[in-house]
Image (cartoon, rainbow, N blue to C red):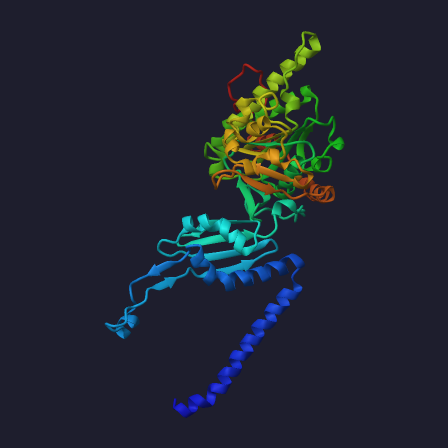
Length: 468
């Protein structure tokens, strides 16, 4: 191509370039106009972060000095003119959401995750953020999350879709203090404890779990609610349709249910090799004929409380409470491999509410607002004293209804989570749609092995049930 031809197409190249820029500007303007007020603020914030990065990074020592000249600089250098060292600044790609910005930076020699973490307080000041956190996305790349607004102070709602979850035993909890979604893998987990003052979100948290998992036939639910006498009086009035059993605050009925579940656990132990071909259900995963059994014990202190007194009625209640504790201990300590998950909720998970031989076996604990340091330690362990910002005693303000603290599996320390509200209308709709999926796991097991003996055993019987 001659020089004249090149000059001839130059105007066309310029026009095409201007058209691309115009199209990009239109897309940007449309995106900005269609965004809500919070997102618009984040868009403007992202622009400021991107434009000011090259000046800000050296100030915060997030740059590296390269004294080695490039090949071109070596050729152009002279003896009288020394080569000037280059200042390298990590490249930054900035995205946004309603709460703030998400920036991804490439690391440089001497400028890695540790340096970004040290600079987060200054980045928060420079970017106008409430808080900033730096984590490693993958080797050589750091994710910097800055939130302009505190996600914990904005109430959220969850509307169940009614679709079968993609991953069984994945519990979606809500958003953390950086507006990142938080979930917990309950595979191979024997038990979960949920504590907190009344009205701060314990039952709503469990309702979401039921609503999200209910569409799957590989999960079955059973509930003991210690704050009601019948299901229609309490928070599970709608969801009871999706449960294969429910009891209220009657200790004898609860005792019978716990015995029934222990018998199921023992029967599964006997049948696992023949039905599954393995000793642990989690080696093959739950199925419609061998479902994951989620045992919900709400207001757990009702069933375990130590009754004091010498009269016949009080002695009987004390014996039932002690037996309930023994049976639930069996479920928590021995039910994991057989596909039994126990969730215990109470206001204050001290040893008198949930016996320590049960509570301390549950690896996952969450706590909504608490009034005392003792209650916070009981719910989350001694380490919570070293994380004052996440201590649930700081969540007593009504603006923190639905906010819980937990020790997450994938990161050190404690995380605060904003759990969403699930309306009774939504839970009722899900229960109605999925009621036909409720099935007693014992019936499913005997259908597979008709000769299996599921006779309930006494407290001293330790032999597993066998096929007749």
